[in-house]
Length: 89
Image (cartoon, rainbow, N blue to C red):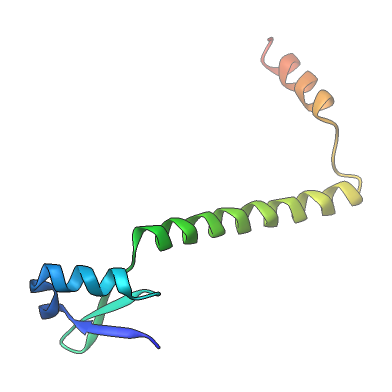
């Protein structure tokens, strides 16, 4: 069940902090009945960021596999050799 609180409830910081810590998901803070921002525990935020990074990585792996299957890829040694030649390394 989503939790929404008016922005004035943030005045009691101890109570608001307890609410954030005890709520399993994000809390939507509203002002004049409209959503202003979302508050969540830092542990949950870190987990969300890691999941997004993992999803981006997996998306790139899928693209790389398609390119390899289509014969568009080349070995790391070939790519490194080309870079060394291009930049006179």
